[in-house]
Length: 118
Image (tube, rainbow, N blue to C red; front, top):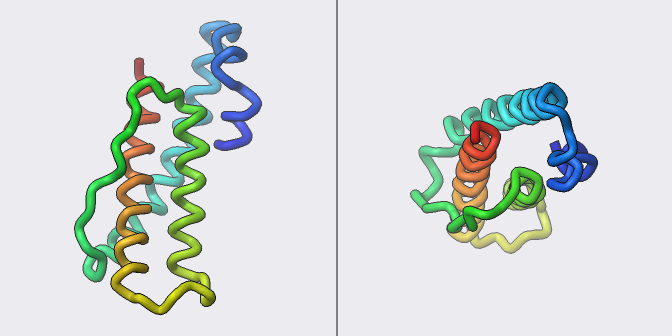
């Protein structure tokens, strides 16, 4: 999805035909569906041990391309928190960061879907 966001920035998308834009939106939605399914699986497994948290506020003028980059950053954060042995052993902080990353991912997926519908 990040590659699509970089190749098809807002200026390039504005020059696409209706059919091309529909195809691009479909590809982005397909990528989002895979990411969302993986996120639901992680939330199902990790939810019982993670604290409740809210996502960071989004700016509503963000493009789906900007949100795709932010989504990748959140996925990397989640991966590092869950898998990096070099991180501090503060379990509560790691759980908080994991919960925050998952909440951000959920919010960004929802926002990208809303942008694609408009």
